[in-house]
Amino acid sequence: MKNILIIGANGSLARAVIAAAERHPDFNLTLFARRAPRHTGKHRVIIGDALNPADLQNAMQGQDIVYVNLAGDLAAMGANIVAAMQAVGVRRVIAVSSIGIYETPLREILRTYRALADVIEQSGLDYTILRPDWFTDADEIDYQLTPKGQPETGSAVSRKSIADFVCRIFEQPELWVGGNLNISKP
Image (cartoon, rainbow, N blue to C red):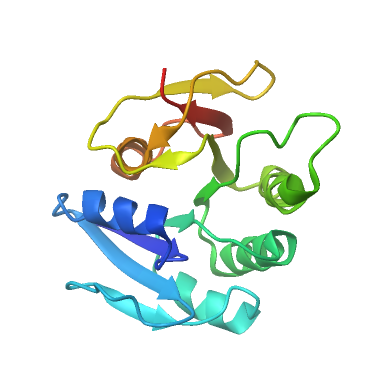
């Protein structure tokens, strides 16, 4: 059984990851959000704020993998998540950032996503950073991965595709450790 904490469980992408993860009987999900998710299934739910270190530290107890899918002050939230993981001894994190965070000049709207990626990369944790293109609701699993440092290619990617990739990491946490990947439709 793998204990997986989903931070930002009410987001549209997180909901797709939760739906995909529910097909795996060996995944035990904990949903972390500021307000109760509409669909909680059989999952443990923790109402909390990623800006509150105590809420995060409580949520990290007993977790194997942390999945981060947030918006807002991502530098502060990322720092709190890293500190809570380090305090509790959780090593594996998957964080969703954005396409375009390494372009110069960096667009203002992407600064917070870049800050999250920088905090996670410098954490010393076993991380995978995903930099998706725009999301679609397409009923397909079709994606390509482009490592950091290579030109981002492809187009808008389905939430189902991202969820499929994330669940592959949930299944085999050793995959893509240290990866910083653009994920897009070929």
